[in-house]
Length: 449
Image (cartoon, rainbow, N blue to C red; front, side, top):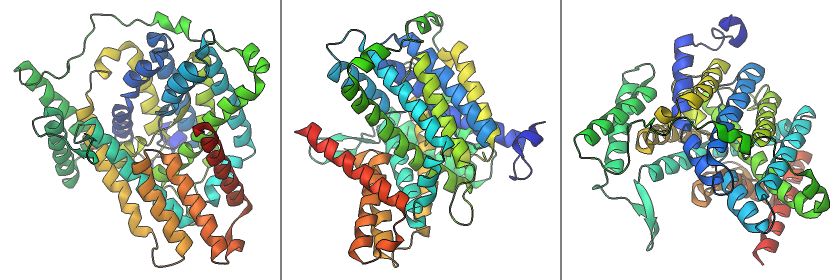
């Protein structure tokens, strides 16, 4: 049954390999189950957000598994949840009653729009119209970006007033444990140990718990805590809380809020899917992703379901690369990840106890693997291709945004094509994306003023 559904032999994988990959993806994504309630909890019921996040993630990831058959996990996107809580609810809508209901309505409408666009293959045309060099640059840029996230989570890279960022302290056990975890993963991978990334995560977590039991680690509690119970009733405070009345009476403002969610979700998803697909070897000989429309439908369905349940925009996660590195190649990986999201609802104290220093090594290692795509970038060819790819690589980690990296890459590529008298190489889709990014810059300038 599994073979027929996910075509394991065709993809050169096994049930064991796929399940281990799915567990690895989940463990690298599990932090969102703690982070999202913390952020959205400033304007909503935190326990309700937790349940909504787990359910919406499971729904979206199951759609990815069975409709697209890709090893990609989905959950509430970072950045979008901060925009939801701080910019929209506590900022633009601070004077409104229950502003989260308005924000959820905007997310719901965004999801419906994306479902429609997916059926018309608009998002698919975008991803397949991106030049090959830019795709490789995007993949490498995401590698640097997720490595940067991992290093931040483990305090290897910290804020620094003098140089903006700098090296953390070796007196910080989080940093030391993460570096040890990275070495463990690298050694296990070298010896072709199945599930090496997952074993590395669990191993360093166990080492951390041993140190805590000995009194050497006091930063946070590393052991699961069931003392407060599961607290699942909060979902009644977040589910089906849409406010279309306000949306229709403040249409212009509502459209602006919806567009902001739409913009970031669109290009974050495009960037993530390109990066993960390239690493998994899922792109065809022309650099396109088969069944990409189904990938976007999973994203859109997750966003819509998430809004109804009570969480911010659901999107594909770059952490899926950890599962790919662990051998994930089919939807069985995603199915396993989705099941773990469901399990997390009743075993949340266990999964939320996994510290960031344990998952950070996986992100850093996978970042290295994705960075290898830069070897495919042709820097000695067309100047537009070279500069576009370069900007994708450097702007994602430096601007801390996948979407921003893509924006700089596309704008530079189109402008250089025109400047070098190769405008005929620019497809109508790329012109459309170019105009969209220009409009985004205008909006940013207007908001800044």
